[in-house]
Length: 351
Ligand code: AHM
Ligand code: MG
Picture (cartoon, rainbow, N blue to C red):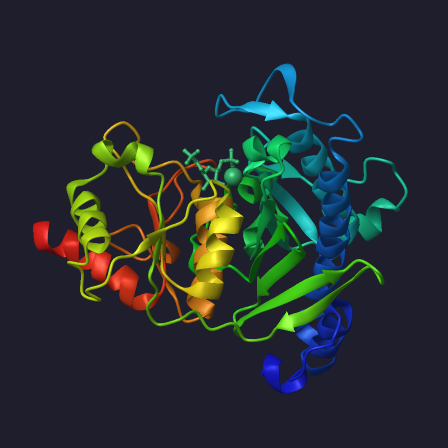
């Protein structure tokens, strides 16, 4: 398994991926994909830290993404950095991003590589949210990048339209997923379906170093993380559950603490480290919540499940939800398995 190969800390992400490939030659494309992802993550980490100094704050006037959200300068910059890095990986046919209206076919925009090389063996789909929580960035609050990698079906070799439609896969089909948190440290957490592993950027050597091998989320926590401003709009089971854990009437019989950064990557990372429950549930005005299935919910669900946690819509596993649209939203409840099961039991009681 992955952990048998690299049991100790002090291993860089590059070395880790090379060892994996040595033992699993079929992972060679995935290894090169991670090379691109980690370069992009280092570049975005630098840009985030310097955004105020380089005047990359605020929004582009009149610039909106297809979801009607204003795009901050750093949203657009981070999207370009990731897109370019993944294009050079050469294994992608299709890329879908929160900041792109439609999925796009990868290309060689600068014409550096001969077409035959560009087209050979490209059989992956990348989905990503380049700068999640960007509304927080200008006040120095942590933000992150979320990504997922799917495989293309074989039919897609013949038809470009089929390739684009191929993006609509459930989380269960993910080959890899991860996030990078830009905070007091830059931390990249990833899974290839054999555990969830965390790497911390050592800026003195410019490398991600394995600091959290085989992350295991606590079975139960005592922190809840929801935007309580929406409380009176939530589904009744969520309102009842939160009331119970606030008053010590839940299964654990102690009062939970509230923590909510408002950047999903930071809130999920804390949940992985300390346990507890994070949610962006459905409410009366947003019937599917706010978070996007393909590039926020599904990659996080994969990471959580691989760390022994649970990720649910409240009534079923997020990993089983089939996206109807590239920007489709889904209610998200994730965290320690006992906490998420307890919340699900409130939904079961009313069904
Ligand atoms: P974004 O992708 O536009 O940044 O929005 C997603 C973010 C998540 O990081 C976070 O969990 C959520 O929006 C917070 O939303 P709210 O401000 O409604 O609590
Ligand atoms: Mg986002």
